[in-house]
Length: 280
Image (cartoon, rainbow, N blue to C red):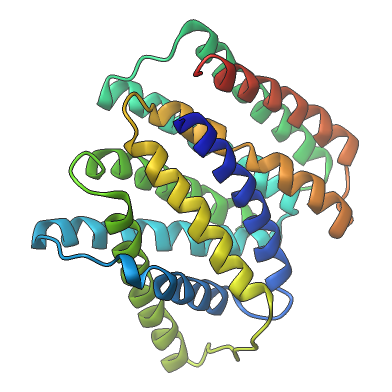
């Protein structure tokens, strides 16, 4: 069951990325994240339960990691094509796989390792494709924002595996969203004091983003809580969201080098198929 939850989460994540890209035409990064997360918190209010002080400290730390990853990821979208950003983000679960093996003792099967190798090969091919697009990663603000997003995203996923052993999925999700909202509110306030405030324009994409990420994360946390679930596999399967963002990004945002990226994603898809099939 956990593998199907991960797949459903991947589809919702792909739609979420596309909705974020569309929302950037109407609002700044910080307002998009703040409003959508605040709406998430409201939707999850019925699931709030009490917890210990150490548990809340762990969730506050997770909120800082998630906020950093989200903000830097949104900034990367402003400088790089969505198809490049989405595929580059696929490097995150590769690191999660390695650390899941080293820290948590997970042992993917030989065929699952073959799937991981296919994803790594796709990432290497992406770097060649990106260089032909004229993207200079050295000194590129979008690239460095993406690096920060990936590293903090990896840390957040590993932290999820650690804390989920003693917490319930809805407790983690509901309180984490509240703490993320608080952190983003502080960031927006600091920016306003420094004269960098942006006007908030309500747009239909904001509640759509909130619904998509709430459902995607809920499926993720419940999958991670299942007996026998492997974080290493779940993280890679969730990168199937790349296929959704690639297809819709090509159609809606008219991005370039589609044929070359399609070949890269086909290789990545083959790796994901191996992971799914040999996790059933």
